[in-house]
Amino acid sequence: MNVTKEIEKFLTDSQLSFTRTENVIIVTIPGTHKLSTTCSISVGTSALTLNAFVSRKPDENHEEVYRWLLERNLKMYGVHFAVDNLGDIYLAGRVPLRCIDEAELDRLIGCVSQYSDGAFNTILELGFATAIRKEWEWRVSRGESTENLDAFAHLIEKQVIEPQA
Image 1 (cartoon, rainbow, N blue to C red):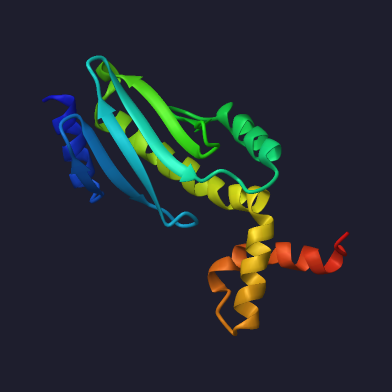
Image 2: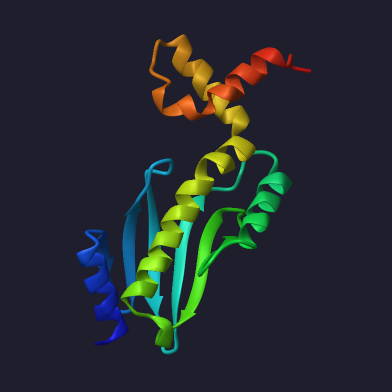
């Protein structure tokens, strides 16, 4: 079976939504913190390449965010965090085609899911705290729900405790 067909079979069996062009498969991986991660899987002549968008460029604390990501890279399998020329954050990986089978596809897609979803709230907390606080205040001032911001409630409490300079 060729690798592209094997990937399509795996994604179908895993009930993951995907589309395909000639040698690129775009799969949507559901998450908990990051609701979904879009991952492109390119089948080359000798390697499979994965790229998944994780977050846009942080608004603040760039060095801290990028350092945190680099530290995570030391513990990761199959893919690693990368930054493009705009500062946006991705997961990227390259695996020899000879290594691709159902078990390896499961590991790779699982890693993209785990790393993207697991890092998302920390990236937001480190790189977008000011925007989160503003969004929280805006919602509260209009009586809107802050339910999907509950993971960041400690940022609001911290702001009240620590006076603004």
